[in-house]
Structure formats: C-alpha cells, structure tokens
Length: 350
Image (cartoon, rainbow, N blue to C red):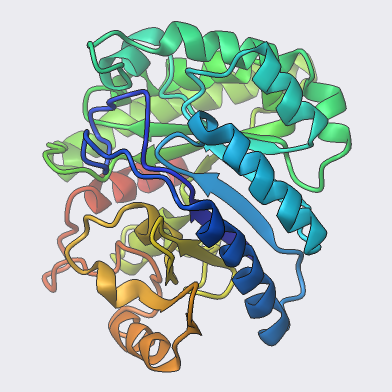
C-alpha cells in the first residue's frame, strides 16, 4: 500500500501549472505527521494489506522541510515501515541532500519537464528564472550513485515525472532522449503526464494526435537505436490514470494495462490537515470542487465506511476509471486534459 503524505505546501518554484495557491506556506504539524504513521499502520493491519506500506512525501516541496521528513521516517521505521519516496522538483538538491537520500535508501520522483526550452518555459522561480540548470545538476549528482543506490532498494530508486503542456509537447521526443542519456534512467522510468490545470488550451483531438504521432515515432526511433547497439531501451510509461480514461472513452483497444491505483486500496493520500483520500491526487490538490467526494476518513478518526460507500457509488458511474478523469461528458467527447491523454495513448499504440 502506498500512502502519499502532503508534508508541506511551501515551495521554492512557481510552476505555471501548479495546483497550489502561490501564497501557500503551511506545513503538516509534526504531531499530526507522526499520528498519520500510526493510522497507516492500523489501516494496513485491519485491511490485511499484503505488500509493505510505502510512504511518499509530497508537497509543495518536501526537501524544504527535510529535517521534519527525517523525523517522520525515523518514527515510521520504528513502526515497521521502511520504504520511502520523496517527490521533489530537484531545484534545491545539493550534494549533502543527495548523500542523505542515498545513505537512507530513499526513492525519488523528480519533476523534470525535459530539455531546457520545455522545462524553463513552465518550471520557474518566483522571479521568473528557469530551474533547468539546477535540476540538471541534481540529476548528475544522483547519477554518481545510481548503481549503488539501486542495489539496496525494493523498487526502482528514481522516476522522472514529465508534465506535458501544449507548449512543451513539441519537445517530447527530445525530452525522452535527454532523460534516457542520464545514468539514472538505467534504474528508473520516465512517466509522461499531460497537464491537468486551469487554462490548459490543448488543440483539438485530430491535431493532438498528429503532434503526438510525430513525437512518438521519434521516440520509437530511439528504441531502435538502442536495439541495434545492444543497449536496454529507456522505460517510458504513460501516467497510470490515463489508460483507464482513454479506454473508457473508446479510443483504445484493450492493449493497455489496468489502472494501478484502485480507490483507497493500493494507494491513498493524506492531506496536510489530516484528511484521508482514496485518490492520492486529491490529497495534494484540494482545490478541486468535488474533492469531498474522495475523502474517506481522517487521521484522527480513521476510515469512514459511509464515506467509502459514497465514493464507490460515485465511481460506479464509470467503473473502468477510478481516478479524477472519470467524469467525461455524457456525449463521449473527452474533457481537456483527457483529450490529450487519449491522443497520447492512441499515438503510442498505433
């Protein structure tokens, strides 16, 4: 079971598509964070979860409160939890932090939106400066430990999270080639995520499909180069939530894997104020108007059966999709960004 914990709302970047208000500066109180660990242990025990509990520290930017993260991890280890992930923008990772991450065998999910023109267009500091140079440096620091870091972990130690926007999608193939060249790519994978944010003006479906087909063909060319050289292909995957949405809208054949989450079963999220969500995305993005539908309890009181029953009633409208993409228009025309997700899947499979 993976639990995504929003440990802070503070961040050093002001990414154009961010779900948090710019002035957010709250941290999860330490007492609540420690109580969250106790609650997760109780939930895993009561639900007879077979797989070990994993905790992903999310934000905001968790490295801004790394001392607090360290205290929570130490307590979690005493409670029998030993698998940890930090989701980071990478801009503040220096050698001391990297050494700590590697020594404590923490996995990393880093948001890297690609080559400099793509990344710096949308992942910026408050003064508008791009963050690519610092993130590229962080990747190189982590790459120095790639093999030894991976040796002691039960999962891949690293994941690149690439948020695609209408502006950055034209760099998709260049982005995959750039990331695949990093030594970290041998021990992780590249996840492509069409951006879900207010104001995203994705083109119409046919235009999107043409764009993504061209980009995907270049990526497959990289795969062929790897095959000829006898080298492993970079592992590129499409966001787990997207397969369900695309399939349910009829754009794909049954070639895609099932969605990985399962509401409140394999993955859950805990918000900064201690609310427990069946959808981990909802725990860190509390701005969605229907967010309460996904809340299934609190850290203080535990899981609520009536709330869980209500959630499954809502999701029953589209049982193939258990994530925030479930409510496409009744006409079958996908809402943005589901449209972009479906186009990317169709391009990948064609």
